[in-house]
Length: 194
Image (tube, rainbow, N blue to C red; front, side):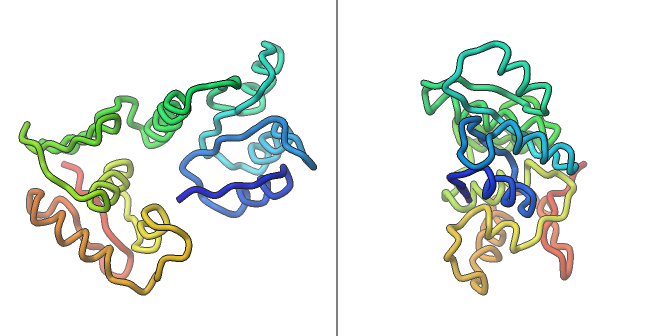
């Protein structure tokens, strides 16, 4: 799920109240500039990865952004593919996964190609099954709630009482080794780490 804010005050509030996987922050925001937003987040203990976007190609501003707590920097104009690759890299590193291929035993998920293999054999997953597995593989050993999965897979207006997450997890379990996706009663799901 992606949220957006068109001014620094709203951006600060959203980053202060939501647990984002990564943030793309423009320095040229109205009401409160992006550098001030970033400094406030870091002063308040917010640790989500932040990529700064700016039209300014000035090394002083790059240094100021990195010193304020930015994890990466991209100057406009840029290619969308580069922005997405950098965001994927930030999310992987924040999850302790530097490589683009996530692994759990013989299960491998390539975040660039969207390919999933088990013991070298390609698995066929639907887009939603892939999103669930991708989210769990970015958080190996951590309990992920059903609500958290819904928020990362669907648009905001999705019916949160639906049991589709359970359906996708059930389908994944049929394609993966037994016990790889554990149910933590009353809390959610966990990808078992060997």
